[in-house]
Figure 1 (spheres, each protein chain N blue to C red):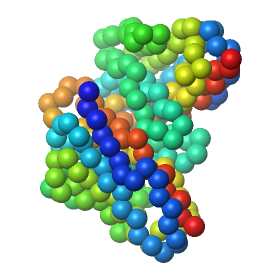
Figure 2 (cartoon, chains in turn yellow, brown):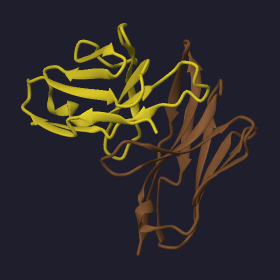
Figure 3 (cartoon, one colour):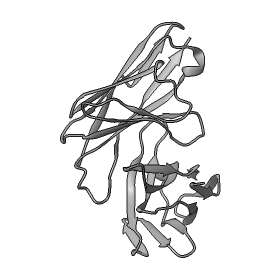
Figure 4 (spheres, chains in turn red, purple):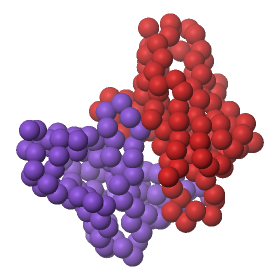
Length: 118
Length: 114
């Protein structure tokens, strides 16, 4: 099956610093990658959608200058939380989708990254 | 407004017992419906996927149903095990602005006790 990895699995940083999270599709080429945020006991909230080689599309209310997304290759997308603050502490999950001809539009999820901002 | 609602919010059952989780959706256009299992601190893992024309889909002890007319789905877990303790998320896929997006339900947190 399709495997998506994330690194790091957890990170603790000081307020004001920037943190980069990597999302990789290990055994398939991801034409589209999605970034989600999940607060405790809540469901996943889509932050942005990125297609390889183009700018990410952000959901309403998500600051594009704060959450920088780069999808430079078909197997790697990165999310950089700039000038992180305690309210950015959350569980960040990425997902990847392969061929646009996949009729099921399957997204494969990564294991998530726990970000704690002190 | 596209929404996916799940019930109950949380559920506690004894090991070996069966349970059924509910999902109601108001999503248009509808592409397909998935049930995911999410262990604490992990990403979601797909259990079943159902298209408009499918009524029932099984995956081991998990059986999902879909009624496209009433826009309801259920996930039945048979002979529950301690490892079934997790959040179960109903997700409806829909086409928006040329991209298929997932609309997530609120989830049901299941706790299986020995």
